[in-house]
Length: 358
Ligand code: 57M
Image 1 (tube, helix red, strand yellow):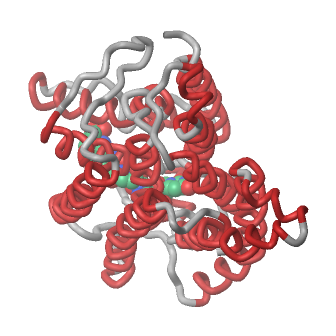
Image 2 (tube, protein in one colour):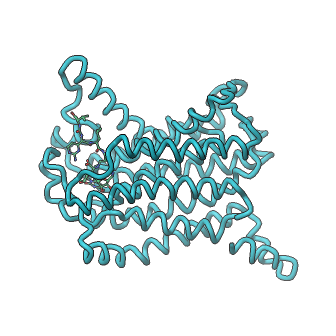
């Protein structure tokens, strides 16, 4: 909005020319999202506390979690508000990819909100059933995948990292594939969100990684130089990613150990889907497995645990997802969190190296 209003003024005042630059608007969007998060965070915590929107804790988890009962949840709404405001103000709203990314993020946020709301109404830790959530997620993701295919001029190729000439064309299989990327990312972030700051740290790191990827994919010269797929208009999503990372940073202020609020499913489901959709738009979807390595490790630990238990009646980990395993081994919570952030940073650097190593 500000872009549309202020950039045209550059003909009279040349200073407004800066609004043309994605890098400038990304920085401004980040500052705005961070400020809004800081400004509204204490208000939201006070409101959620007054409304008794407190976390119900599962009785079968690690004992240390029982003291977290009543922590205000649904803090993800703060992230979504800051992200949406900053994106609407600073991104080019004539760009359909911006609307697609916002639409997917907010729709998944609505599913999460329904889940959180049900948990609160029933005053237990059961919201929507797993099946209900999956059906809703796949419905939204499938519509988004069709739209994406249409917007990209039916480009159903999927570039493979490290191999510059390998771009398998999935044809119509691209739709289920893209839906799976969004739903998978959403659920993987949700599984990771089990310790203070554990999910938001890697979400921020992955967002910054994708701010770089989207910028590169949307810049004809840099994309050509680095031999990555050029996607006209994808660069505008750097503004979205910058706002996402900064909104996350603002939320982390309140979610840092010991947390004053949790993001709830409204946060975890939407943030994962946001990462999935930007990865798809920038045609850097496979590398998301590396960039979001922590989420993949957490989700894989659950799959291995369940399969092992079903087949052998034996567990691999003391408890899945993996962060619970370390808790039960006696690692202090802040140590697990910071170590997972370190792993996430290493994964992000590995993902970025694919820009050059090909
Ligand atoms: C999200 N949610 C947290 C909070 C947060 C299939 C199975 C592996 C599913 C998995 C599961 O339900 N995962 C979903 C995990 C919960 O946090 C809330 O949920 C939101 C995110 N959706 O924003 O609102 C609890 O996590 C803690 N927390 C923090 N700080 C934070 O910043 O400390 C969250 C955010 C909060 C708080 O205690 O209450 C959760 O864990 O419930 N299920 C599990 O993770 C369960 N694992 C399990 O059953 N493992 C089995 C099998 C199935 C693999 C096994 O190992 O044998 C465990 N979860 C819990 N207790 N809480 C089991 C025991």
